[in-house]
Length: 422
Image 1 (cartoon, helix red, strand yellow):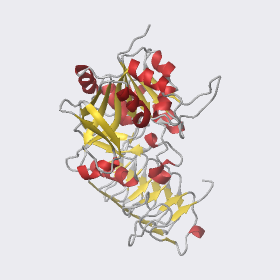
Image 2 (cartoon, rainbow, N blue to C red):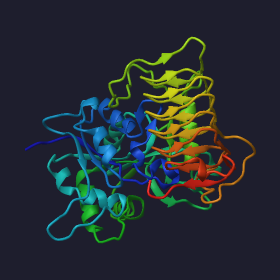
Image 3 (tube, rainbow, N blue to C red):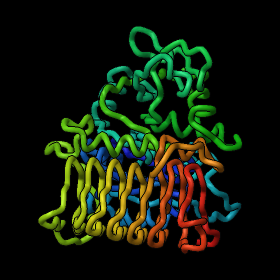
Image 4 (cartoon, rainbow, N blue to C red):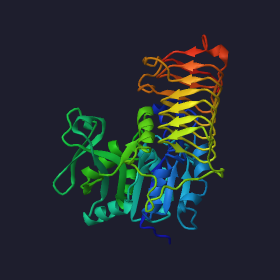
């Protein structure tokens, strides 16, 4: 019988609604990041760099691009005869067919997959964080403490602690209590949503709680383990870790890549980030163009000026166009004499000539101010913006727009223009 010491289960089914139009057609873990990657590349690369060669990826929402990206796992060296990567969508069973309703329910529905590897330990990960972590070190900590469950935690500023699930520990890092988003936190150790379980403990907890609606780790599985006397430990992580679940945190994490000394370094030899790369020619930058402090992906042609931006692959930036503090994703075409300020432009967008994005004073977004804020202009994938349009800040465009969609060729700050049926 196959026996793996530790397998990973990667939760990648999330819709990521706080990323607005960026995730209306694609799961959050498949959103482009850092010029050539997708968000899911980071936990997958962590697995292979940590010696974890069996990964189940649980997909649900808009999984097509994610499935295509992962394929059979070749870029991460996860195309194995035994183990490797497996994409695990919800499937029809003889008794009933159901969607994954909660994080732990998704794992419960794949008990057979895990059982087939007879693991000693199961590593649970989420597919929407940007970080580098050696899971082997966490496993060593788990074993050394004789833990049944180890939860990765990160110290956060005390004033922010009420936004997280908080672990209270004793001097040996054993978890004595935990609170979900406490109004008055008793500790600043925030759960990172990364868990190592002894397989027997996990299996028993999932089966015992199977009837819970929206079965969840934080609400059901971990309290069950604690109440049954399982030793729970907190593994403290002090490296870079970013939840890119909002447009502003997504924008910040991309901008941090181009710092002079980036806190999160994509260029380290010993901890590579692997991805599926399209076959692209090298980038081409003409003589009188300017590129300062930016990432420029393969196959991109720059005829204008780019400052402090993350530019993906296969993009054309027209002559006279100036781009500042922006993220432009793959295969987008930008015309001549445009101006883009603090814009997030998704994949396969077409922007005409003389288009200006991010102009004027800020105003709160009229439809979703909690999503579209911080002065960012967001353009959803495959959108079209015609020539001569000016767009304000905290605004969003999604769909194939025409000049008649804009009053006087202008979309004021805070406005939402979403063409239905796109």
